[in-house]
Amino acid sequence: MYFMAKETMTVRLEPETRDALDAIAATLDRDRSYVVNQALAAYVETHHRWQVEHIRQGLREANAGKFASKASVNKVIARLRRK
Image (cartoon, rainbow, N blue to C red):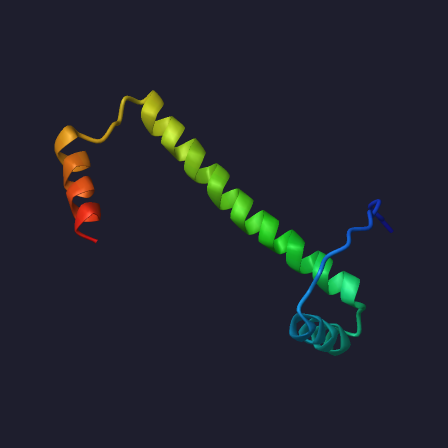
């Protein structure tokens, strides 16, 4: 069996959030720490992976010389100014 080292972290939660975590933990027959750790790991993986992939895609496009034309940039700027 494989175990990773754990560290303690203190977090302030709304009582409703703590209650929801406890309900999920009870349903899964796990403790609150397990549920929080799983949720944080999923959040970090999902958001980090998305951001890094978009940066890499932009770098690939830039390295290939694929840049937005002046007209398309001006079109986006005009659209954003209307908002």
